[in-house]
Amino acid sequence: MTVRERLANGDFNHMSQAAQPDGSLLVTLTKRGDPHVYRMTVKNLYQADEHVLNETITEVKPYGSNT
Image 1: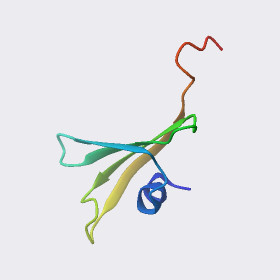
Image 2: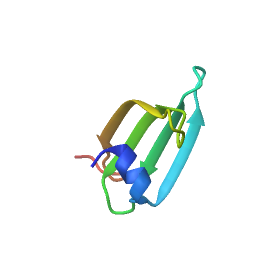
Image 3: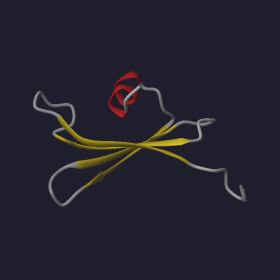
C-alpha cells in the first residue's frame, strides 16, 4: 500500500504536515503498533492536479532498543 493510499483510507493514527520552501507538503503518517513511518512529499494535496513527488517508508526501532 502506498503512502497516498494509507492517507486516503485513513490507515494511520497520527498525521503531521509541514510546508516546504518549494510549495510542496511533507506528510508523515504513523500507526500505533506498526514499526514504520510513512512519508510523502506532495504538491497540491487533495487537488485535481495533485502530484506525489516521493514516498518513503522507514522502519523504526522502539525507544530504548539496542538491536
